[in-house]
Figure (spheres, rainbow, N blue to C red):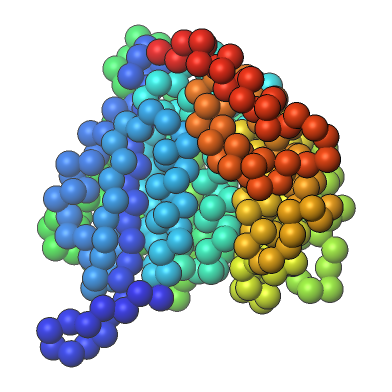
Length: 392
């Protein structure tokens, strides 16, 4: 936990606030997400984090999901409290039935490559210590995403406080929605008031509307209060944590596999990330237990037909094994690199393949594998990718 020393000699905890506002810069735009950033930027950082000392990171209309993931990962690695504010819109990938947060270049046909998979975000948050993370959302869902969200297929994972509004898509030919729920937060803070988040949520839910929006409230922190938005706001939907708790005497693997085989890939990834977090706290980074769960997450990404994420995780597993002293010719190290290489070969997005090529090449030089020509195969594909134009 980050501790800073104030002039009066008192020690204070440093919190981190990550402000993420994104929406497509095309006719797919449903919400003017970035319009809330000036209001939040005018708020003292300490109000955003609930701590005396704070750092703030702002992402306005990012275009690359890998860049967003990196920023989320960096913020999630901060040891102090983390509050993530998200304004934007949700879409459903029809092929995998996974929710995505649209970014600036997202279109319906490029959703899987230009939007941020929601389970990427929840997977990073699951690695943090329980009850140190808060997520505040102001989202609009497109028609398909709205149906899945209303059916309970939405959340941020266990151990995370959640407040927010998810609205249905605006009627055709109507102007884009505005993040009025989050703007209410900013207005109250700018007036000098610092009520608990649960009270802020209740007031914002009562003022923001619309009547058919769903308001989410999961407040497990100390001093929490019941959340009761005034009519016509529907009752707050409580997030359902995964059915498998990270208990030492439980075997979570059957439930994880069942969720993945049923297409509930986000749920499977969240359970695995929760167990990885437990392994990290109990046994430490680089331990066999933590490595096991990292590799489980890599294989779950494969089952979710997300080869880019699977490649990244297998490379991370191979790197961690080498860092703990495993030699390059051992079966586990070679298997991790081989699987990373295979997933990289499955990538259909040239830009993503190019972005991962350098890391994979470094690993292949260290771990050539038992099949000859693996390193040369990477070089041939990189050369072919150089002739493929970047997606505009």
